[in-house]
Length: 200
Image (cartoon, rainbow, N blue to C red; front, side, top):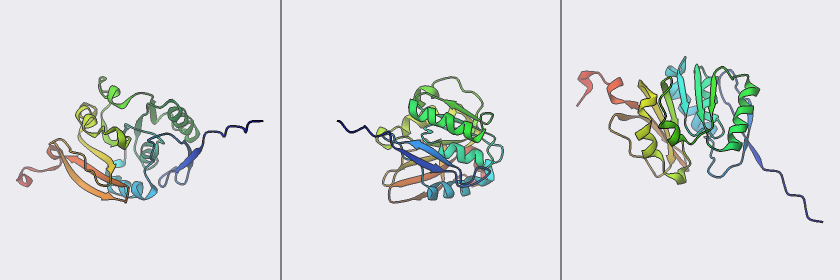
């Protein structure tokens, strides 16, 4: 008799702050999926806290939902989560239902680059760009992202520890950090945040 095939392994992600603090959400194990660690998210949301209240958030490679759900937990008004993998999308939908957050979180099952080519809806104040590292999508995403962003939007980017993606000219590095595996950085638009006497 052949041994029974094991069920698909499932991990967990924990919301670490806000109204859903310590809520654990199941995450199907999927190639390329790499949820942002608690430490990285804590640092990121400390940086973003002054801008989160009432913000619209776009999580382009939602995966586990760790970034978009954390943002809403901490005060963002609305989040759009884009995820192309059907299994991850199903789990995201279940997680949003568990939180009772259907009115605040829009789930889109789509390829992020294809979604960016569509006409923009409500503009995002904060965008999370954390694609599968092996796909090298940072440049293409940043090229397609601006029409979906508010004029004073902020963009968060994760990349391998030894790789800083080249950002287009309108974006300036605000803060950055790193672990052994990951570089994480927050960017702001130069035109939206610098006063005339601050230009070189």
